[in-house]
Length: 205
Length: 205
Image (cartoon, rainbow over the protein chains, first blue to last red):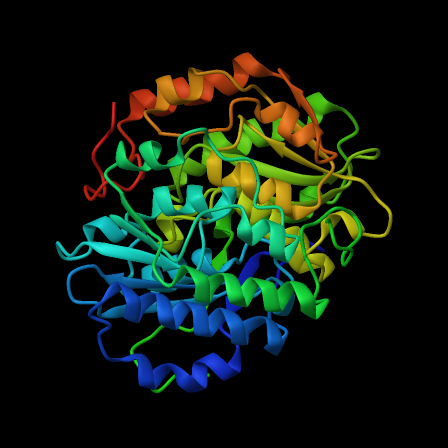
């Protein structure tokens, strides 16, 4: 629909072509936590080199079997949208596939968000509203911000308890060193840090 | 592009038809804070009655002139996406229009996000990453959650100072009673509260 006005009426974000081409190979389950985190670490490492956005990737999987419902990477740069972090993409793509805004109502299956580090403030909130029941992280310490220069935003003082109180479990510390190695490599690369501060490209650290 | 796999590769959210039809009338500036909040209160009141999502609306305007860059409403229900709150829609539509992920780099203009209540945790983060320099709210107290039944999520202990430290001003308490009246009406309506908890439709309060 073309609106007879200067206003945009539709928002679209899509996975990069390199990932779309790889998707058929991911139609197999990832039984262990290590399998799942290994994949997000690998996708994160490739994503920034391809120029789509930061070194972040996420999956939505069925918690018990590891069936992959969706894969997401950060596409802030390629989409010109500051909100399409990896977690928002993975959650939104799973909801698009299932036709459901509540992933907690998805056929009685418990779904899990897998990320290569603790989500930023925005994605932390997005996780809460999505309906996933489990969060699996490579890690959650200050290393990501320190090594990449990204501001991950202010978090509530007890972010784990706030999730637990809403029925969401947290597992962290799986292939942590491998995740940190990606951030360190990113930090040395001079890639764009897209935290908006009116600069568009200047590092914050 | 059709992916040869079961995975979704693209996320799309759009404004509802009723709002698209009204857009030409909003191609005029809103000089005062009251003008701006009056519009989001009115759009919020209509939005839930049309069935698109919750009673929330947002604008991105030029802070000094009130020129409207984008209008957003909550389209969680009509899009089947839990992340497309009014603020995310308004910010993303402004970025789509300008072709820029950083609204702080938009031609030297300072942009403002206008919302009919304090953003939830997710939208609070989305605001920080968007590049807007000002936040204008009808209000920010517990009334929204108390009257509507929505969980707005855990916030950092000093959410205003965290914004100020990132160069974002906050103005709150403009047409506050009118905003509360919309939430009260919504609360009495029995409309869907879409905080995901595996229920899909049950009220949390």
